[in-house]
Amino acid sequence: MLIYMRDQYKFNKNYKDPGDEQIRSHMDFDFVLKESQRQAMEQGGPISTSARMRSTILYASAIAASALLLILISTSVFSSSYEEKQTEYFAQKHYVNPPNIEAAKPIFASYKVPAYDGGVIEHESGSKITIPKEAFEYKNGKVVTGEVDILYREFHDFIDFFLSGVPMTYDSLGQTYNLESAGMVEIFAEQGGQRINIRPGKSLEVELVSVVEVPNLNIPPSFNIYKLNETERKWEYTNIDNIEYLEVKPEQVSIGHIAYEFQKEYFDRLIELDVLHKDLLRKVNSSIPVPKEPVRPTQQREDALVFNFDLKSQLKEAAPVLYGAYKDALWQLHSSEKIQRSELDYQWETLELIQLNELDFKLTLLAADKTQTILINPLLVGSAFQKAMDSYGNALDNYSTSMNDWEQKIANKKKEIQENMQAQKSIAQKNYKENLLSLQTENNKEDILPLIQRTKVVNKFKADELGIWNCDRPVLPELSKFTAKFKLPSGKVLHNLTGYMACKGQNTVQKFLVDRKTPMHLDLSKEYLIWLVLPDNKIALLKPKDIKSIDPKERKQQFTLSMIEDVDIEEKKLRSTLNF
Image (cartoon, rainbow, N blue to C red; front, side, top):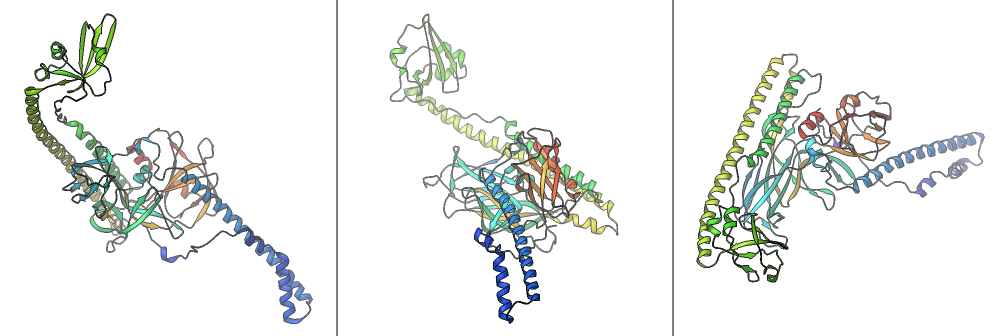
């Protein structure tokens, strides 16, 4: 359960490291002694024996105070040195820096929307994106027309955040916060493979469905909306998150809890269904053949080289389907060919024709002492061209109808998959609740009832730019601190690598520099999972029980990480591995 205690602490946000002059001023022991002697003279003439004793005590106190100051300064310098090193380490990397593993490859859902009319996208998670009329523009500022492709993906838990490589920290007034997320999205728009932008004054209305921690069901959680500015390497606050409840999902419990086994079975089933869902959706588009778009008949180019080779027999053999349309055609050189007519004027013995597509053919001309290969297109003229255009128009109408039918079939399949997945999740949830009821007694209600204190919500906000948007609340890092050394089972000490840490009950992931002496900020009453992706793409893991077992009085800790031997681990196994 997250308790946000920001108002209970006071921080010196304008603190500056002491300079050399300031340090030297606190090391002037003679000045301290003379000042004490001066004060004694002012209060009663010559210095007595007791005054001398007091001076000696003051002198010793000054030495002790200065020594303490030096210890504090050296500690500050040590901490500052690590912070500077960590800052430099991440500054040399991309701000959005996914781990180099197979599971981190981004998968976007793609939706087509008419730019002029706009429309509503309904994502498989239940999220919606409303796109207004004439919402997009090209880089030159011209309004986009025609269809646009909306590329969209969501991030919901610490594993999603880890795989995305998106930083989950926020700096405000000199203080660095961790961002606990209620869900994050990435949205882009393209036309013809080229990125386009949202027009000034326009915005997309996003309704992001996610699950959040709710300690008190009568008090809605409070989150903000942030836009990632990759150029300036920071999150930018934009507004307050307008959040609404949808449904309840149970809080995850620890090993040893009375409901742990039932809940693990339930959550494992949800993970299995989510992975299956993604896999089925990924295969849908290829499950039904896409209609083939007809090719527009070719017109003669002004600079084209046209010739009248008799290729009927070759055409009939190479492209029997197109023979009827092109048997009386002329031929012209493909626009990419630079060959001259003189090079074709030769006594060729054999002509070989190979169809590349409905419009392009490869022609090989053979003679006893010479071979020439060129790309050519069939060319229709006069009434033959008009007849072909009429046929093309009919084919285009049929294609449009076929594409609409194909898209409807794909949509129906996706809907069927979505409904089946929802039904399977409902069955799993029903079984889970029945199992909980079988455990509940008068004596353990306090252990069972909190399991319904996670709830499904919809985050509503407006996106006036394309990119990454996050529904978050800033959380102060823990105050407890020790230094850690991380080792592999072989004994090798790890350093100059990126470490990742998740805290149970906080929906975020923290990135940090793994050094030979790494300052760690943990509340040892909570559960943490720490892991690294090694240079060979294997994962090294420090489990919660290994962190819990340390002596909190020891300020220096050594951890031996366990190894996950899989290289380029798949998402399903990764989730199972990092589940805690």
